[in-house]
Image (tube, rainbow, N blue to C red; front, side):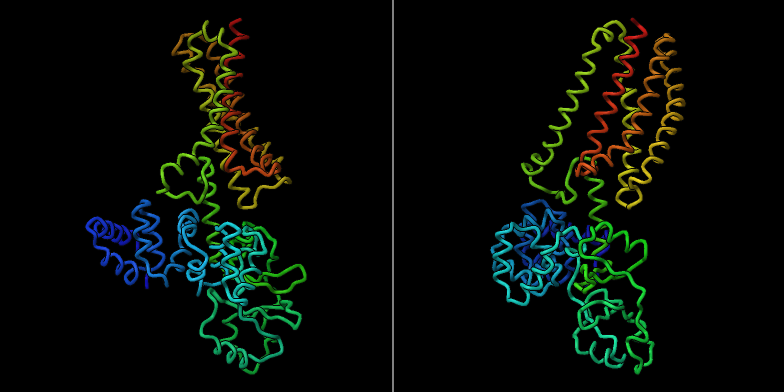
Length: 452
């Protein structure tokens, strides 16, 4: 079933909401289970407030629910999963590929996961547990163990007959791993070579021995970078002994890239990348209050710094009027650098070895922009208040703050990563504190000296 485009999704959502308002549940059930692709049903669920979402989910056929859950954001799927008992979860996950089952189970409390595993047959349980044994943010947690493997000493004709024994190939199969008797991968056999080669040729004769394999403990972001850099469609996953464990496909990697992009965007506001657009009021308020509290503490720190120079502010009222300019200029400059560095870290471009070059660049950029915009701000301030002294003070303060902002924006993400703190979450709050405090101290401190 083809997926809907954006306009069609909007029309469907409006039609379903109208049907729900008029009590047309039979019509809605038919639309959800026969007219829409599971991905579009997931989109509709994510686009609906909690009350409507609950009604829509109750109208979804059970044999489609597992497929729909795969396409839901973690926040939404978690809310749905936590309302199910162990048997319902087993029914929902039956028929799904192992890595899709793992994705769902990783969202559940450990006790519930154990109940679900006990309810599975031994073969399915063993397959799921083999993936669950790896952290979810590694290649092992990302991999699928569904793979068709072949030996090097058989002919292409045998390979073709072996493939035909399967009802279908695992998704995104562009090659078959070639293994030896110890289950060690020795090469890959591209599907295109199978189709164009002499049926009498052996796998060893046409297999590729120059291929990318990924160790199971490699972080998922590094996996995504490998796929992007080498334009991979799939890659085998191995243990430290070179034994085949499973494979990762491009659709798994796209999910990682999308999650990382969401994380970087939402993290700047102190929010989780899985944040539900239609999350309940209390849940939303609780999540946002944490970073509001942290920001409040930093704001009190900035206010305290201003209070130290209360006497100077009383003597020269113009300082209070111009003070936000210094902090704002530093905040913007620092945010630009912070964003570039966090993006560079996510892409694997920024490491300790090239950090000194980046710091030197930000120092020079801060000096250039500082001189340029300090001159502009100084001329405006002198014209505004007819006081050359205040122009000199704000020019120096802007220059100092732009330099410090650039250096802080470049260094904070690396410092936070060393401390095992997420730069996307904490970086912007700390940077704002640095630029505010440095800006106020520079501006008001210089004013205290010059007007003493």
